[in-house]
Length: 417
Image (cartoon, rainbow, N blue to C red; front, top):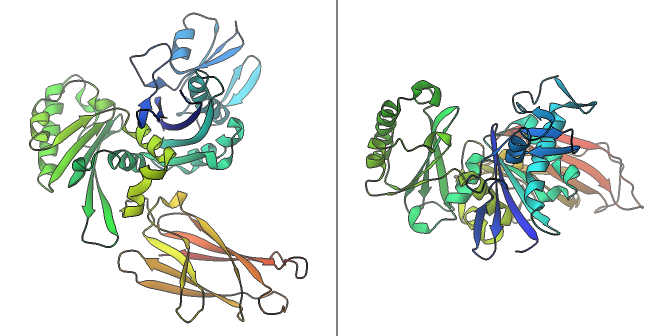
């Protein structure tokens, strides 16, 4: 087994799942609990043993709590942004510290199984974007002792796409259905491909059925749950020609589907799995050939940017230089370029719609910089997003070497497209 690992992590409130890329099988492989080979769901629980002065996580923590004296720490997600403190071995912890410790220990518990294991890339998939959790995880690289680029955070939505589009093409030759049934209820996603467009577009439609179907609603009445899901499935499959159906979430872990199975399996293939998101994150971690669909298709979801942001080079062809390209989640969309001004004190910013290539233009005048000879003012131009539609272009004066030092002036142009 290679010592270099590409890892996908599905980080939810109650459980965490890990997968690594098996370069022999050429596909992600789920990581089971060390003390229970039959499950891949690792509980988000910590245990500190006062006997061994050691922290345990997941299944090992669940087992150690019954065999050793110590302190159990759970409810980490529920208390993540509270002011509550936990005292363990006379040391005080806040829940954010415990959260990062838990994530690190989940990863370490896998890496410890191999000698000289090294993380090449880790992609962490969370149910949906949360600014505070994203910020916490963005600093994980420091405690893991890796470069910032080694760790990336994405969403279940994106991980699901990575998983689906890395299956055989016959499964997504037409539309694809993804049902996610977890503790919060049932959500439905339909993935359609618009092949008559250039570039081809992947469009994701979302329907929230959590008010109609939730685990707490049914209790032990699996017959009513089956009947309700069969109605929803029948309604949705009539809207589009669906090649395949993927079912994920703890709600599908028990064998209660009978009526609904008959509906879903008519002329299409159906897959049930709890590891779709962790394996999708692993495909993203590997990159290369596994992100070809991002090159081939323009991805449209509720969290993706649907336009490019760039500048005009000001030449005769009015060349568009992209700074940040659309088609990815807004929180993972950014970019920067450096340019040298040529007989101008203005920068023309262009926002290009990827549907119809329509553009909006804004001109930023670079004022307050000392008079310099032509082509001796270098600018850094960066793009950052605050939502799929909002963000800012940041322009910084870099000067031009020792001859013309920077003024440190920064120009910020916000946009809402």
